[in-house]
Length: 453
Ligand SMILES: [Zn+2]
Image (cartoon, rainbow, N blue to C red):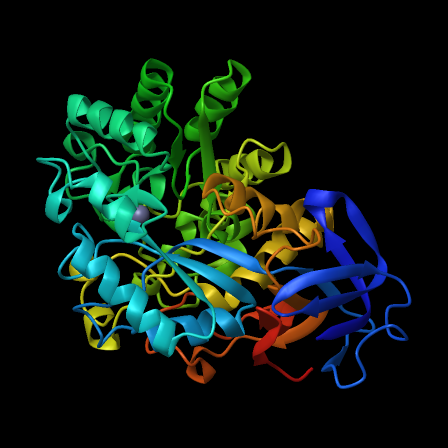
């Protein structure tokens, strides 16, 4: 395949120029101007004029729900949604049913993905058996079966000694450990950020310190063991500051942020977009026209960790801008309508994210001038590829895998979850005006998905 005339951005190689990209036998064969005359005559051509061409986007945090929860999503539907969002690789989390804590389940997912997915599916194995936090999963066998990381995502290992052993094993097997940071003793059954709005709405709070305690624990254990700990979906200002300071000291930690945490705040639960520029309290005190008009207690605003304050959101954006948070992920977490259409306390945590991820990142970080396009793309490409030790992914060096994402950073569109090839519709962004959209998702030099403008 030959892509011509696009703005090619390859952060790993500090390349940003209008150029052609030639993919031969599924691998990057050349990047540069004027490749058309030398290309094989019968080669498939893609006119990328006016579009950005970059290494295929990687989403290292997603829930594909197979095996066991295929009413919410399947490998086929989840990866179709990811392809439509511009992603060429996704990492599925192990909190399936049964959990991905044994080589058989890893094999099942890999076989099914090979048959049913047009994009790459990588598997994260569990840290502990059945994600119960009690005894270590067979980490060596999971590695042999092909997992590329371990995580108890959705849950968090509470026993610090067990976590230390997990890190020591993971280091021995050269596997990154990804952690969902939640201290159960302080979070208990919180359903939203603990603060002003949890008090006003009468919902149980999930305090930021519940995340920060485990981030601190992970920093200490990374220092003790020398194993790398990746902190998933960072939501609080304190977590960002802890990571920033630890990285300065050379501790092997990293962090990731999700679009909902750098776009929304907990005032969304009270139901107004106007609230999102501030913490909303002043508007509540003012004249009624500024007050919430959307339904409050919308369970599509319920996720774990929860949406936090405007100050937390600003800190997450600052952490992305200064490089403290190197990676952006969706935490794509599909749930059926009937599961979400219940009282707020009873609804499951999580929202779908593949198809809004790129646009929200572009809007909040690039169009708002917080990050250059190249630095933003790095958080979807070279940074996750390095963490996951995928040398052929995340860059456009000669011989790299022929995975490419083509997108229009300026395209304006409206998100309608009803058009998604995914099975679930649980998004707080329904009806939102978006800016920036994938146009083609190319895997091993073949088009996995292509959309119109
Ligand atoms: Zn999680």
